[in-house]
Image 1 (cartoon, one colour):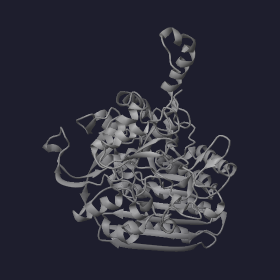
Image 2 (image 1 turned 30 degrees about the horizontal axis):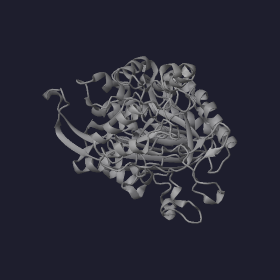
Image 3 (image 1 turned 45 degrees about the horizontal axis):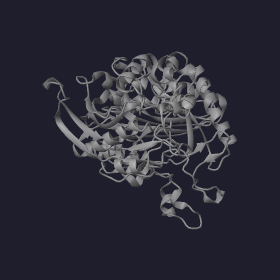
Image 4 (image 1 turned 90 degrees about the vertical axis):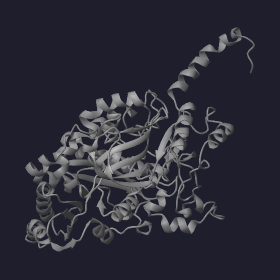
Length: 575
């Protein structure tokens, strides 16, 4: 239809204005008329160092079933390997974020189990993106997304329990290949002075902890970082922006307490440095203000530490009766403040029938470590009902010897992922552990299981709560506690909804253990009643002001991130 004059437009003005209003409040999605043309994408591609990527779900090489498009055996062999998943733009740690459920209950997904009889569909995986290898790649991608009003997601490894790096119909910036690592024994932040000199590692956005630890070992240094099988978690992405915990946090603090400089491409497309001297407000926000909300991080610089000897101790208890479970759980919870004050950390899982725990402590002798932990082991042995108990204790020369022995290093070690999992979590406060251990134990035993990340207290509690954007509740905590729900591939939307309802119901049940309902946003629920309070606490208002300053058009919006309360569930339309 052609219009010869403005007069011809008059009858259509209401419709045009309505469409303009809708367009200004909604992002452009794949399949919409506003989606960039092939010519526009070709123009973008001409500015990039690599071809555009077209992410597909992890199981897609196994389809069509009668004539697989790729190496299905490789997919099956590596399905549960976190490093393999990180190496592909369309695969995520938890496959529930690769699937999309429509309002009518139908599911778009691509299942590894091809015998289920479902077709392989794109699901929640973005259809196109940029394989960023340079700063210029990221700048071009950010400007392209802004110019075309696209929903933009940033993916590093895809390790995310909130699915913030996925998005149906979105445009992806994949930072996985930004692998630069540099070590500077005399690092000075830009704008700083010689008084700020510190041995530091600068890690590119795509560096994973397996790579960062290898580099640190070569320099005989320690980096405070994530601990998991395979070490596939990204070291310079969502981990640090969410706070970043470690089994050694009680001695060396959280990731945000060790980060001294970021470089980032902002929503305007500028590449800037943020630290205590330059763009200090954004530096504050990046340390705990949430992943995917501020721009595209291109590097993080962490201070490093001298290596240290350490001791690892553990216990595996088969609990015979409910009363024995209550006694052991109560004593276990009372133990947390004492151990964290002494620099201990670790991981455990508690239920009515078992307790499995692994503890580590740096810079103490084997004898002193055993003297500290043995009273708890002795208590458990003497609980009525004769629990079956196995304990162990080993000294290690340094962190890297422990890491190689306990978790294994290298891609082949892999982490067991690739399932449908959602979490509910809260930080366990010192107050609950010290003053209400029986009540806390009773509450946690009411779940099928409760996992403890013993990653707070000690050095974490001695940091000024307002020094970083992280929820101040971390400074009152001694551990992170979570429970989880999952479902099998091919589950109906009704079955999935029931599992998600159980997760949602678990969130408020955990509130009594936590200061101000605080939790760790990187291991949390999508169904927080008040994510602003739970994830950010009293810092939310300041974070929102910083968000408006650097991202006035809300280009970077993620689930339960700063500013997301103004957007619909798919984060496509603003209220």
